[in-house]
Image (spheres, rainbow, N blue to C red):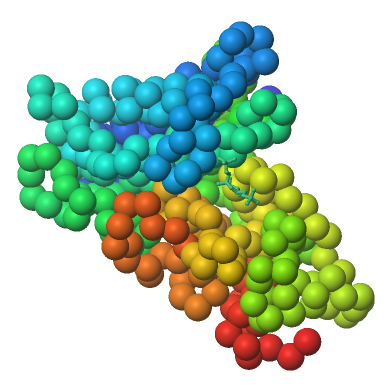
Length: 335
Ligand code: AFP
C-alpha cells in the first residue's frame, strides 16, 4: 500500500527546503489548509442550508457579494490573524489592508488571498476556489503596511490554491515543486495525491471568454483564429474549455496543459483579474511547474503593483502556448 501523507506531515518534512525557515512558515501553511477545510465544509452545504444567495451588496471589485463569499472572507481572516505569523493581509473582498488586531502577535509574513473565486458559480454547483500568496514582509517590524503587500510576484515565498469541485484539492508550492493534496472528507484531511506537478510544455486546449471577441484588438482576434484553424502539424484546432472560475480553469490548464486567457478589451483595458490576489500567485505556481504567465508583454511575476486592487490581462499556462500568445499580442507572429 502506498504511504499516506497528510498535508501537515508533508509541510513539516519539506520545511528544511525554505531558506531561513523557523517552523513559523509551516504553521502558516497549515493554517491556510485549515481555513480551506472550513470553507469547504460550508461550500459543500451550499445547496442545503440558507447560506447561498446574494446579500445584494457589491464589493470593491464591483461583483455582487454572495453570503458564502462573505463567510469565506471572514474565515480566512479569523483563522489567519490569530496564528502570530502575519503582519498584514489583503483580500480581493476587502477594500483596504486587513490589519492584525493590536492585541495579537505580529509575524514576518504577508498574506494575500482571493477567499472565494468564481462566486457567481456557487448557486449552480460549478467549481469554485480560493487562491493565496505569501510574501516576506519588507518593513522591519510592527504593523504591516501597503509596502509589504505591493510586492512583485517574483518575491512570493509560497503560493497556492484550492478547488472546491467534484473533489476538493489543495495545490501549493514554496518554490521547490508544486504539490497537490486531495481532501478525504471521511477523515477531514488533505492527502498527498499529486506530487511534483509539471505542466506540459505545449497543450491543445484554450480557455477564454470568447463572448467578448468583438471587444478584442486585432492581434488577440488573430491569435484565437489561429488556435481554431485546422493544421495537423501544429496540433490545431485547439479544444475550447471555459468554466468561468479562474481556479478551476487554471487547475485544468496546469494538469493538461494549454492556455488560459483573460485579455484586456475595449470595455476593460486591463481585463478583470486582480494582479495581487489572482494573477501573481497563480503565475508563481505555474512557473514552478514549468509553465509561464504573462500580461502579453511582460512576465506577470515582474510586475510591481501600484495599488491593492490593480487588474491585469492574464495569459497563463504551457510555456510554448504562452510564448506564442505573446508573439501574437505583440504583432510578431505570422498566422
Ligand atoms: P466571479 O467571482 O464574479 O464569479 O468572477 C470570477 C472571475 O473573477 C474568475 O474566476 C473568472 O475566470 C472570471 O471572473 C470570469 O469572468 P467572465 O464572466 O467575464 O468570463
